[in-house]
Image 1 (cartoon, helix red, strand yellow):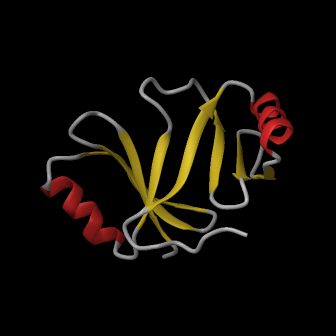
Image 2: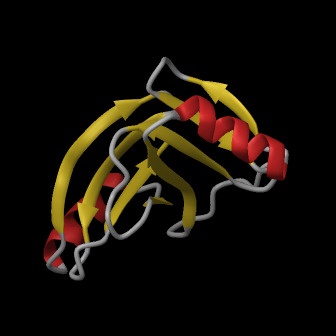
Length: 116
């Protein structure tokens, strides 16, 4: 069971990890998380309440990528820029929809996604 997306709330969290297999094993063993693999460099986890992802790469200083949900992706993209945020990845397609990534005023990484 996962929660349905709610407008303008944290909906997903991504961790960049050096070893997906070891990370999956750890969280499965300790917390019972389940997984869906999307190739060798990405998997989605479910903790029974919320979903997130593990992506192969160097862990990001300052924490994981926080993913918010929004139905008006174009409007939110424009709002981020207008409020002084920095777009780090323009809108792109992924399994499940579209998203973009940005840094807030403090340099933290966020993404916003939508089904379309």
